[in-house]
Amino acid sequence: MPYYYGFDWTYLVIVLPCILLSMWASSSVNSTFQKYAKVNSIRRLTGAEAAQRVLSANGVRGVRIERVSGNLTDHYDPKTNVIRLSDSVHSSTSVAAIGVAAHEAGHAVQYAQNYGPIRLRAAIIPITNLGSKLAMPLILAGIVLSFLGNFSYTLVYLGIAAFSLSLVFQLVTLPVEFNASRRAMQTIESSGLLTAEEQQGARKTLKAAAMTYVAATAVALAQVVRLLVLFGGRRRRD
Image 1 (cartoon, rainbow, N blue to C red):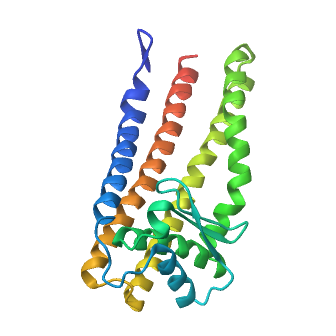
Image 2 (cartoon, rainbow, N blue to C red):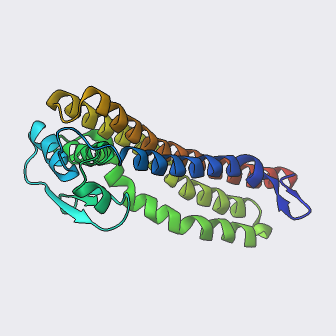
Image 3 (cartoon, one colour):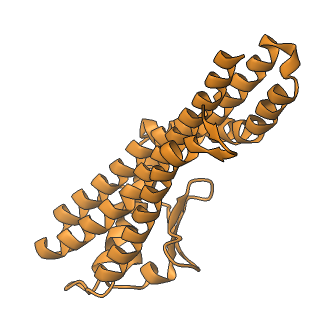
């Protein structure tokens, strides 16, 4: 039985540990970035300059680099072909800033070289968004129409399937992010953007950031498992 005196134990056992992991990952990436944001690179390259070096080293042209407000709001926008670097990265000469900027440039390189997983991720975004909108209405409809028997369960499981698309998105995102970091570090090393000692700081920053994606995947998986446990158990009881 998943409920005891109105308390949902499935959330405590399945989902909460993953949420705690996500909180830890978020705290870790912030603390790691702040640590290496205080370490300036010997070459004094800014984040924007480092991103441009990564693009040039990979033969990528026509990508703009802009500043965006916020903290760690860095991202590559494939629609406008723009790398947007946050205030703490764009003009900073820190080891952390160079690592993050090179990572975002890695995404631009992925698109330029038609890297399969990032193209797949872009393609499933509309389907994922639709699934997130339909999931709960379908599940609720199945609960309300429980008197219809098997049809109600069909609606519930369709809702769970729609919700599971978010897990698919997270699973596809993992290789995309790991690959962007690998491309970033390869160029940093081959082009000498950072010294060997400084590279360790950039690598640790990117590894901490990668853990946030691992944690997000774990949360999505836990939520799907919880729904299956809740409604699978309900069907057996019926």
